[in-house]
View 1: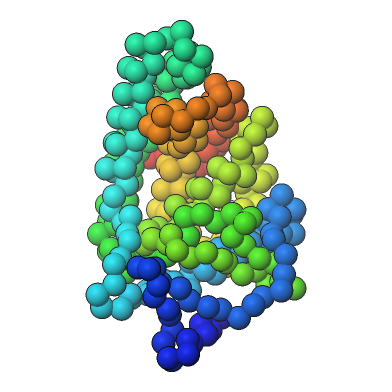
View 2: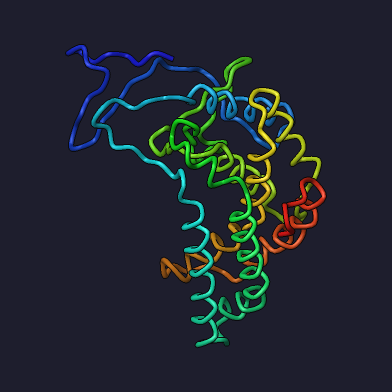
Length: 264
């Protein structure tokens, strides 16, 4: 979709330190990821978005956001955060949220360590060595609110938070959001998403292994706990309990799909 030029002929307008661009209006509706037809179409749109960005070189002088090569540090940092939160919870174990966290802390910390070890054994280092040339632009917030269905096409909106990374980043976030709920891991849903994505952009075995590793890492528990421990915001203990069905069922499902080298 073309960017409409401003009155002075520029492709953007800067106001108050922010840059704005204008696109033609698209008449459509918000995508509904829970609908089979919409889900296949939006996952294919995500794959097409990734592929269209492959090899993109930002203009000289641009501020570039990239997560390429940072996974090992991120995993370590998140795991250490989970450990610190356990120590904090042990200082006040009768607080309801702390009590709920202590019920799951040991298992999720162990899972985080095993994901770290699996990442170290994987081909991540080789893939990351290529840098942004081997990465795509990841949306980072690919959700119903940021997709628009218009006829047979799907438009991807709100690109203000894109970053260079392997496509696994967006796939992991999408899958965990779809799996959120009391039913835990759903293999048919996972396969439907994977098939839709690979119908447009096949993933190499090495990248598929990274997807399994990133799904293994306890991102969901971390995200459920960070408001309380990191941001100091109220969070009901029930939020931790809501992610447990997924956290406790995904590992066996992932192992059945793609055994991780050397065991996870």
